[in-house]
Image 1: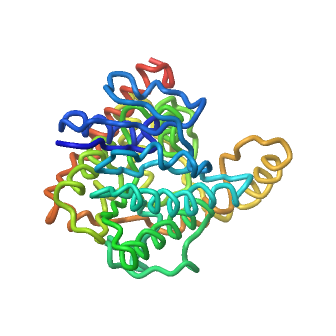
Image 2: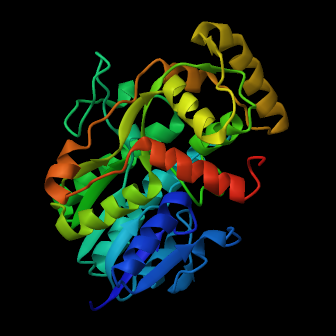
Length: 332
């Protein structure tokens, strides 16, 4: 296989999993890494490291030189953002400028990691798919809005500039190497440590991070340019997920289900404290608004067209709990 494969976001949870699958498939890897980022997730990867940042577009051309393939996995992913314009610049402008640089570098094929956050949801609580309609008005929160707009940018560039990109939309990945951790990873840590007395019920689609990574590489190998592929696993209510986590970890599941309305004043105060003191709030009005919508999705298209075959959610939960425990995040 001639040429290099560039992965952005390779120190992160999904990016490092993608890099591992690519290495197994024999790709020559170049990884774009932000200056000062924790590189623990790069252990065991045989790759050329280049420094770059979505907020520094001048770093793109050197990173892409001689690259045949690009996996754009990097994104600013936080549910609470003190500085929304910065997130928009990284996720939307950064994506547009990186895609432009990839076109100029003559990249043959691009896999863009979007998110189910950019997709529509069904009003009846059924599983949404790639075709479920969505408008910008329905997208809640800065992160989701940034991912929606970035996906629209990529779709427009595919249509107008022949950008050779395939889009993947992962659902909620869990599993090993969630070093930050992600918001979902933090919930698993809290639940498995017995530190979660109550929760607000919602629904989400849970998938093993290594299956998401496999789906990215299948999208490179078998995906159709201009198509979107949901990379999900199983749909579960949050309560069912917590019961699964508690069972795997050998603790009692959270007993109390709270309504969104009860937590609204708490969210307002949390946000006020967060703005004043820079502490990340555990609950925000945005997360409460999101929890009213069931984030259920179908991966049937990826299964049909890519041969995508995710493992059961319980296996993902088990691997996540074991990794957090091995790394001292959950008491033994």
